[in-house]
Length: 231
Ligand code: DC
Image (cartoon, rainbow, N blue to C red):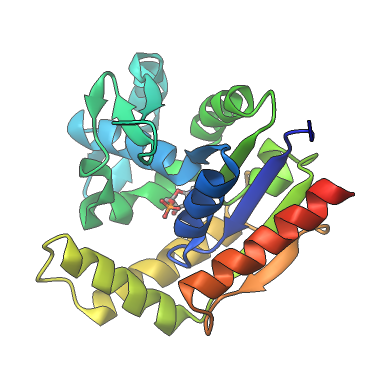
């Protein structure tokens, strides 16, 4: 039997990482872990607890309360996408709002939050057979991953895709400018933070999907996977 590897998919916000990671995991029967969802889960927790007021995070309170946060992924059925649970509650919808998106990057910049989640991500991927997407998977969480992909796309195209997704979920108010502004803020914070900033690992393959269809990008990713498992 071929060895089960770790596939690390990193890149900017809203450039289709999760969709391609999910599709690959399904096809090759690997576990899919959306680490962005975990940062969003902690953000939702902090918002609900009132630890984020006017954009300011009460770091000490969050640090103290972090041991109350239990995150896990569960599938509704065998072929479903894993969904995030926060302390036993399915929060898959609640973590995808603009409110959470607006606070998640500063939360993800906190060293103690990263440590807390990185440990769990490493435990999830311990035995291999996992496709994990995020910002620091190939650089910090699994620097030894056998396959690393760095995904990019034109910012305007990313904003248009994200807006379409928000509209499909019933958000009628956010404009393209709002989404573009949120994306560029997140890109800036994600690439400039001190702990595990978003950057391309030296041995990562760059995949720019600005002008690729979903089928084309999935096929490309699959070909990289085949190559990595043949070596
Ligand atoms: O992929 P996403 O948009 O759901 O990620 C939400 C935020 O979490 C994003 O602004 C950056 C952060 N993040 C991170 O810092 N490290 C990860 N491994 C995954 C996400």
